[in-house]
Length: 533
Ligand SMILES: Cc1cc2nc3c(=O)[nH]c(=O)nc-3n(C[C@H](O)[C@H](O)[C@H](O)COP(=O)(O)OP(=O)(O)OC[C@H]3O[C@@H](n4cnc5c(N)ncnc54)[C@H](O)[C@@H]3O)c2cc1C
Image (cartoon, rainbow, N blue to C red; front, side):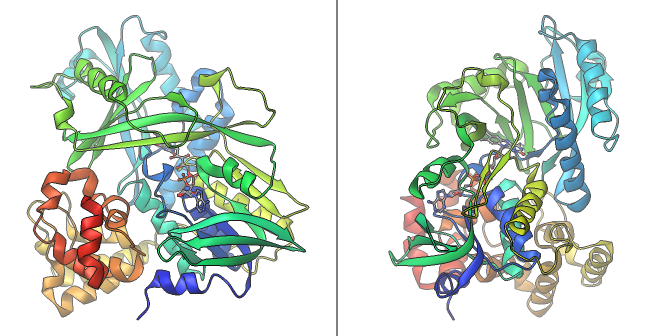
């Protein structure tokens, strides 16, 4: 049977799509999910894996942008808070409220009370949706988070935002999956080589990077969602837009778990910016940085690593300071920031707004998305659908709900079935949560199929890869439905296994070979070699 990817690549030519989305990060994924659900014929290609670039490097937060209050961007903060609230409501098991436990040091550019009042204003701008902020005395801080170094501190405060439980790339994948469920023809490892307008359609030449075969994809609307490569893609298609991107590099380091409390420890780093210690399952993710760079192909430098490690070691009371040897994995990405395309260079770097812009050329039906955040993704999807309507495409289902977890009734039915078969008793002793919660969160309604697989064969509930919370039935499911081409697609993006298990352990992990056989069949050996090369 041909794979889902192969059959989708075969369906890319031969008809005129309503929309071709180039780029499968968060912006492309939500655009495809929303337009496909509303009834358009949509195709999407990405030259890497879905979410394989910026959208796998974020801080995993859905947040209202408390720091933009410093530049008095209250409208933006209110809007981002509304987007965050909408995500928490729509994805109760994936996007979760989390407390930010913040330390304030004497002499910081804003006094403690000013910041405490700021958190209350933030809460009001967030429409009182989350738990109320709290001022923290030094005694409370010492009692609740003994790992925090309070030297020089005069107190602190706690406020709420939200985080993505399963990580950013998985979050993006679920939008791609939902687009596929609504008939979108999506394929990873297919590169756009540029587009030309021919009559009233766009013709985009694409290359399947797995086979080298080239095709022509025809569409009424062309959507450039290439993230940091939007400007390059526009240049390849001869398009100019009112906006362009500049880049800010941010890195995170994944280290052994620092605290067991499910909250984000927050500090002001040496450069005065917010600095986070974020829970990531059995590990902790620390960062980030903000450095202006000229190219999207940024890498973690020794200086970045030293900055993050020295900040963390100063602000925490660890038994042993963290060193490079403790780093399990690294994340590095560039924030694509929107500026006017005037030809002038941007000087006011740190004051740059983090808003997104959707540039539309009505005459040629060309759309380009600039900037954006995971937090604001539902708005981006809906804006693109509305743009398509204005460009003359009729949306057969304009009001269809296109996002969110299945409702309470479906969840209760799932939990009931799980209870009847005593699913949670099969949870591996090292797992951080019971099986029923995890399967529901990761797969939603598709998790019912997994219950059936486990009832048919209890071996399906075994953890296949040592140290990873992944069952045999999940890997079989991933092979069928998650368009995994390379081992990294599975280990880094559909799951976060490679972020929490060091490479050296992964290489010898029992079960990895069997997982590869399920995922890649005859190509198992070569995919393993490619990954560890
Ligand atoms: C360090 C850091 C921390 C962040 N933290 C947060 C956070 O906590 N919360 C939040 O909301 N946001 C956060 N962001 C912002 C957010 O991650 C990004 O704005 C978002 O992921 C950008 O998504 P995108 O779809 O525009 O770009 P990408 O995810 O980069 O997607 C673009 C895609 O286009 C593809 N592409 C490029 N050229 C071609 C071509 N020729 N043919 C086919 N495909 C092509 C690429 O392969 C890529 O997959 C953070 C960003 C960074 C860097």
